[in-house]
Image: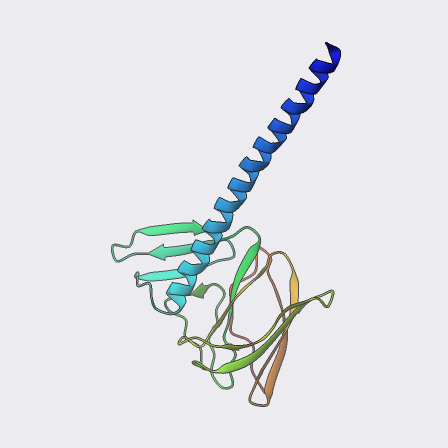
Length: 178
């Protein structure tokens, strides 16, 4: 009798663990899909595919204002930070939070070698990228870290540090190639 109770308790424990894991996996899957949807929406604004009155992005939110001046605020992914970098040679503008529908960088649709590593030397990005029609390079980086960034273009380069903490801006317009 005691053995039967122990076996039932063990089976019940396995079922509870399996149900809990299935629920957790479903929640993770939903969060992952929501993050991808937000990232796609941000990209659509960056390339001019989405066309509301304005869209800007802070460290935590995508803020969309439609033609009737109604504002929609969407949460960004919890573990990723959006940053948009506009490398420049001659002209830039001051910016803290990137306007996906208004910021314009100097170097439109140019090719750059982008190298980003964390402070421990772990490479996060090492690839050739093209700036968008707005002259910016959009990136999603891990949150709450500081990174070393090196961008090169046609023999010119710039190195800088950026960080992805809640108080940081999402628009980097200070990286002058020389």
